[in-house]
Length: 231
Image (cartoon, rainbow, N blue to C red; front, side):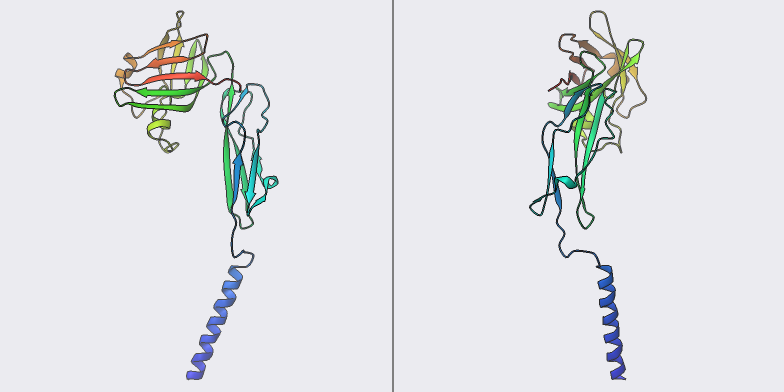
């Protein structure tokens, strides 16, 4: 009986060894991860109607140059429409582990209000100041302009970065420019979680034709939009 028990144990261990060998077939003992380094401007700024030319990148894995193995996806860039887009970079190692990077591409409409801006949002009462949000303004027709965030990135870029798209921290709305370059608030796109009707009544804004800068505030948040320019 003891002899048969030993035989069964040996058979079980042999089966386990074969199984492990099959499951690990094609896998390396150590995996080396790649890294991608972007060079040049980020964000990359180009004029509407232009052609995107990648400013450069490199990739390394196990101390070796593997730049040629990087796939660059520019399909998300629409050079015919002012806006903020991304170019994505990808490399996958021998074991299927990816390394990624992305570059912001800003397509501007120089000299026009419907272009792309760098936002600055300031809340004096809370001593909070956030800069660097990319804000797009579109021509909505009839003298009105649509802005994707009336607060210049205060929530989605400043207070709650990284929560998009699970939570919508953009306050979308409209404005128009009066003859004296003051701004008129033209309403919001839809209901918003942080919406307060009192904010609309407090709206004051101006447009500077010489610099293209837009300024406005809702009483609690002061916003400055400075247009991107070609490098």
